[in-house]
Amino acid sequence: MEISHLCTWQYVLRLQIVPGLDQNANYVVKAVFPAGKPRYMLISPPEWMNGITMSGSALATIGVTAPILAPANAFLIEIKKA
Image (tube, rainbow, N blue to C red; front, side, top):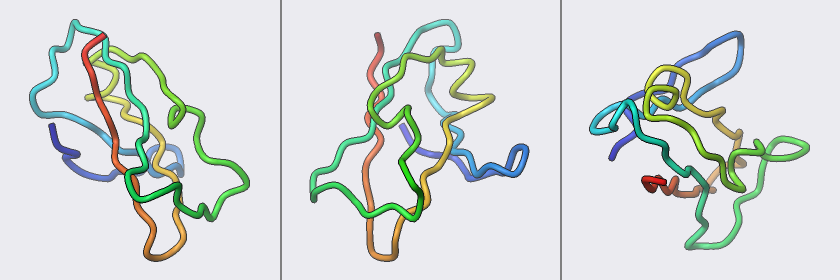
């Protein structure tokens, strides 16, 4: 699974996850922090980062909102078939 690209949609930066998803299956998507929680440049991070269930079709066409991180911060996106 890879993040194919960043795109803007209604002035919001979104991550679209495209390759290898079953369009009809549901997936649990959440952020994981192997190096500790990052610092955000937002008041609060997007709600999906705590965990959300989405269809493969929705992930491929809509994606999830990208958080704005402080410099030198990172996280991973975990995607599991529900």
